[in-house]
Image (tube, rainbow, N blue to C red; front, side, top):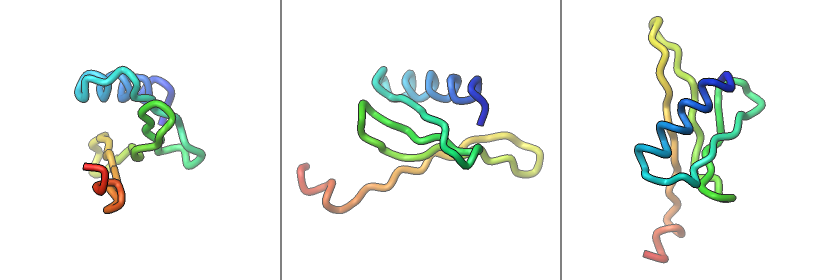
Length: 70
């Protein structure tokens, strides 16, 4: 992912989730960025170039132990 793509995705996610603490950091694989809220990693965004379309996939795992506080 390029820096401009990461900046656009970060701005989009901040607006969509109404949270200015969301931060995207490029990963070594080149086509992914890690998503943080503050210092906590919450997921990964991957560039999905399939059939000539350019889209992004956000993956967030929710562990059962995370639900115990609810």
